[in-house]
Image (cartoon, rainbow, N blue to C red; front, side):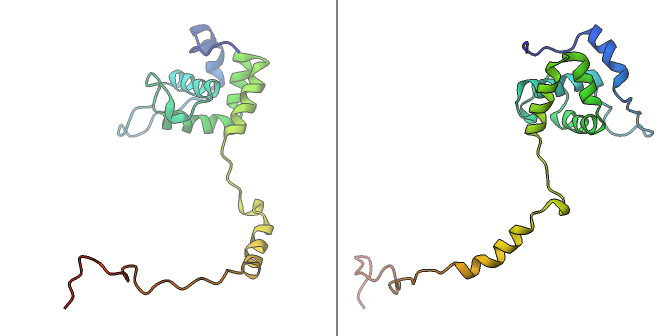
Amino acid sequence: MDPYRDINDEEWQRIAPLLPELRPRAELRGRPLANTRSVLNGVLWVMYSGATWSAMPRKYPSYQTCHRRFKVWYASGVLKRVTALLFGAASEELCTLMEARMRTHPGPEQKRPDADKARDIAPAIYKPTPATPLPSSPFAFGSPFKHAA
């Protein structure tokens, strides 16, 4: 792949219709929505560079915003369509690398039942060695600072 660069105006015109439109808040409180194009550039930078989200350059919106939108775009399949349009065949490799880096948390149905059995068996297998008795005090020797009374 070529070194990463932000998407240009022509690329943005092609992929903008693929991105879901974020509705402005009904109330005029809180922070304004981050620019979708700069968020996408931040997401693509992380995907392309392999860096962590918190290492994003300051020219992009906050990494929390970029990561939140990445998760939404990834779950809806929008991100695969956008990268396929931008990078062509190389997008498969890019998405595969990103999927490998994503954390997955097992649900209750995915937990291993073997782990519970191993925890129950472990106390029966473990036999501690007898410990040698410790001296009554670590300062049992004669201390030059103690005064005899």
